[in-house]
Image (cartoon, rainbow, N blue to C red; front, side, top):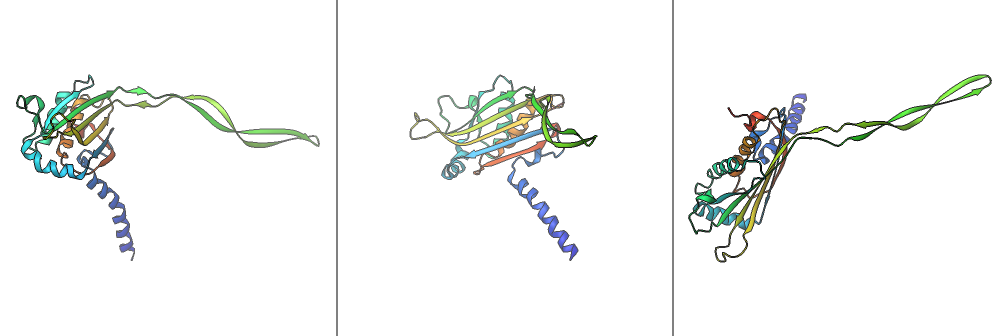
Length: 241
């Protein structure tokens, strides 16, 4: 009976982690004791749009471009990695710059990149409750009693260090072939942020590219994703030789 109970407990413990692994398309980057962290959110449009994407994109391909690299210098590296992953599911995908002159791609993946430097967080007031003592003389003797806790300001607590971060957004657009002048519609949006220790991750662009490659492989995924997990410089490949 005890053996059966232990087995049931083990199954219940493993179920959440198994469900997380199944729901996380970036699960190969998880590192429980890693010094970096990764957040990834994928938003998707209507199901009909993905049915059409799966039908037409293998023939028409997807044009990939960087619309804003935020002055990071990571644009080419991230775009190349995203395209590499994208071609695993859609071999005809290519960079927008390599698209035939005068041709309007039916699907476009536009990449934007931003970064934040490491900084010290804001200081906060440090207040600690301290016991008070009251004393009075009774019958020639001094008697003291402890009073309730009272808040006492003890100065300020220094803010914690906030690690640098690079954020990448990829929007997938669909142009209307029957109305080329119309604004393209958004099929999906992938946003991920890599937060890292600066001394342990010397090439954050390489880290962003590692994630971009996996995100590119998820282009045909028609469901939303929202995950936040620890990772490591090794998993992110941000110290390439």
